[in-house]
Structure formats: C-alpha cells, structure tokens
Length: 310
Image (tube, rainbow, N blue to C red; front, top):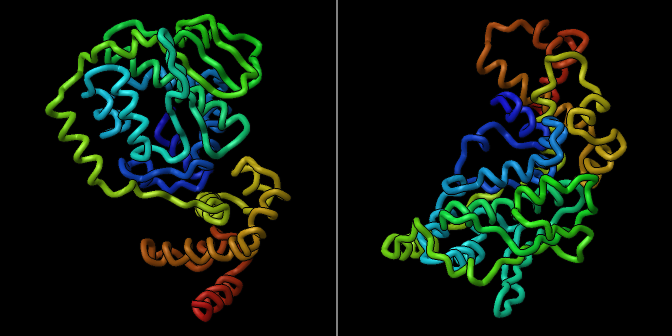
C-alpha cells in the first residue's frame, strides 16, 4: 500500500497525517477497527489481518516488544506483554485463563468493538502472538488449538497454514489460543536479564501514551478539508467518503450536538484562513469557487460571520 493510500485511509477515519509519523500516539479503538475494515476492502484481501500478524516479529511496538524479547522464556515474555499491554492498547486483553499439566489456555479479549473490524483485529492479535513466539525462540512454535468467535469462513486453509494446527474452531464462545506448557518454557534467544530489568523500570515510570479522541464531527472535519476544492461537496459525497450512509452520518452528528451545515461551515472557515496564511496571492474568486460558494459576495459574508462568531 502506498503512502498516499495510507494517508487517505487515515483521513477517512478522522486521523490527521501526523499520526502516521508518530510513535507515541494511541489511536482510538473505533478508528483502528474501522481501519481494518477499510484495509481489507481496499486490498480485497480477506486474510490481510493474518498476513500482517505474521510480519509482527520485533520492533513494531517499541518498548512493549523489547519487554517481551528480553525475558528469559516464552511464558515470561507473554506474561510481561499482558502486564504492560497498556503501552500499545487499552482494548485488547491477553491472559492465561486455564493451565493444566500439558496445556495453557489464553483468552484474547477485545473490550470494545463489534463486526468485521473486531474479527480482523482478533485474527491479527493471535497471528502476531504466534509470529513473535517463533521469532524469539527460533523454534517452529505452533499452538495446540485456536478458537475464534467469528463464523466459519468458506475456506480455512489459510488459518491452518498461519497457526500450524488443524484445530482451528469457529463459532466459539470466546477467542482463545492454547499453547503447550513445554513451549512456554522455551528460552528466548533474545533474552537479556540485565536489559530486561532496565526496561521494566523504564516501563513502570513512563506516562501513559497519548490517546487520540476522534469524534464523528472531527472525522467529518478532516474529510471536508480533504474534499473541499475537488468539486461540489455534499453530505452524500462526504458520507460515501466516510463509508457510511447519509442518515447515519446525520444521526451521529446530531448525537454530538452539531449538524452537517455547521461542520461544512467550520471546514470552509479553516480552509479559507489556511489559504490566506499560506497562499495570499489567491483571488477571492478562486477561493470562493474552491470551497463551493457561488460568488465572492457569499465568501465575504461568510468571513464576516466567522469573524463575528470568533
């Protein structure tokens, strides 16, 4: 996926460009689940979450990854991952729920979110755990069993290939992964006890990651900033851009105490002030046309209204 495609998808769910360059911002859960859905649709790849999960070796999640990799054993690394999960997410829980002599069952729980986005996020989480275990131990670790709440797909071969077990059950009451307890005792080839202690103290002293709170009105705002200047902007066009319906968009804006007309006016104001700051040579005629006004008189009246409101 190209950089422009990633930026377009991010803006579709209301994320500004700087989020793609940030290493310490936590994306809202609803935005992340929606991104999974949009990525699947854009790439036309129903297994995209499994494929991305397989790429999760080390380094993508910063300190959280290195807390895991410097642990002595796979079991200890997974326990540290669960203990410090808030470094990367507040929506996914991973904890051993039952342990017998030969097996250890871990539940993977998404606290918020439903639908296809939830299914994809769960697939990614489980595939990422397995990929990380294999990389850190240097062994072909594969779970005993995978259980998924989602309905069974037409073909399950890809799931069997990714997880290395034919015991992949669908329509389960919960999302689970079962490891052999012997595998949890495997030493990590990346273990570093001295560094592990330093990283643990560091993790305990860090402030929580910045969380981004993007409402539907903010998603509409970023969408309009993108759309203004590229033809006439209507609520139907904005709804299509945000992959929702006109009625749903109106209802969500109303729930936040605003309206389509108010958000369009706010976006026009932001575009005009930005253009005056960065391109003072623009004529009023071209600027009025860019943001969808019929003439310069309408733009002048709008600017007077914005100034009075401010």
